[in-house]
Amino acid sequence: TITKLQKDITALREENEQLRINTGRWKSTAQKLNNQWQSEKSELTERFLTLFNQHKARHVESKKELDELKGNQRYERGSSSLKQPHSAHKDRPEMRPDDEDEHDYVTYDEDFVNRMAAGGAVQTKRRRKNSTTGATEEVQNVK
Image (cartoon, rainbow, N blue to C red; front, side, top):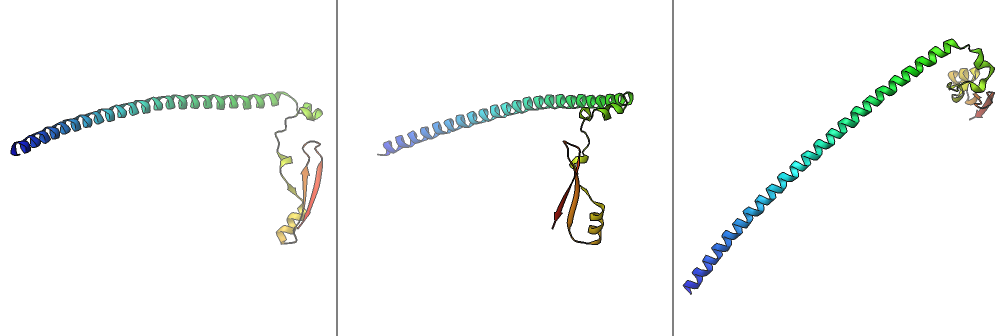
């Protein structure tokens, strides 16, 4: 029985040694995979940053071109308006660009403004310019 126990102890020691060797291999494999993952991650990050910086540079360049074109367009508008008489626009109002926003804002009657300043009753009377006909219409609200 002693020889059998010694054989069992020897077998267990060999198995234990084999398990330590296998553990070392797994640990080495895990470290290699981690290093590979880190290098791939760094490479992808580097590629992304390169593409991002290229795209950003193109965006900045395009924005500068757009700003330059807008500046040239404003300059051309300014010089062309100096050359053409304004009466041409008055003759044909449909050709005049609608860049004025007067018809988009509400204008209040002077009496209403004075009543509101004095703390009077709230009766709104406002004028609004019709964008299609150009006529001024009055709208009254009593609250």
